[in-house]
Length: 271
Image (cartoon, rainbow, N blue to C red):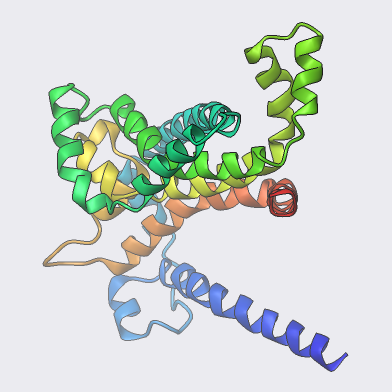
């Protein structure tokens, strides 16, 4: 009983530790810049609702949000689809071919992004993919697929081969077997992979910064960056931009929290 009580207290303290920065950011987003610099931990003297109106307009928030949602949805969607197909083939390879192919993808995960970002930009420029949401999506698929393949492959090795044999006996080809038999069984690990990839892609800054220079195609993270200048900072407006950028993905998580936790837990038990 004592251990359980201690664990609950520790959980509450950890929750407060994570929530306090969010609370301070929210409170200071309603202050003037001077008031925030005088005291970061106090309540606002006057609630400056105009901060949000100003940042909404300066960020071109609806357009930036649409760009981010589009890039995230397409990037994560194609990453999940292609990674699942590749992992299925690798997991069913006989001999050492599957092992070495998996090692190839695993080794690519160990290469720091900073070592390849210049060649990637050069390649994108040669292919006329700069300042293109399509180009960014292609880069996302290429960079995030190795980890997703690794995740899917580990799950697929636990699936019984008898299901596929039964499907083949019934006349199903390899594509019908994959989409009708295998894909429904992948929902737990797909939930895990989707959550991780959405968070990574949504919060990505470096890749978007390298690929997108035109304001019309900028994502939320790039529009937030303009509030962090070298010689002047408006920290209250910067906090507003950060909150506006976090609200959509936070709302998505709260709406799908039940299914996300269930999928992550099922994936952990199965894998």
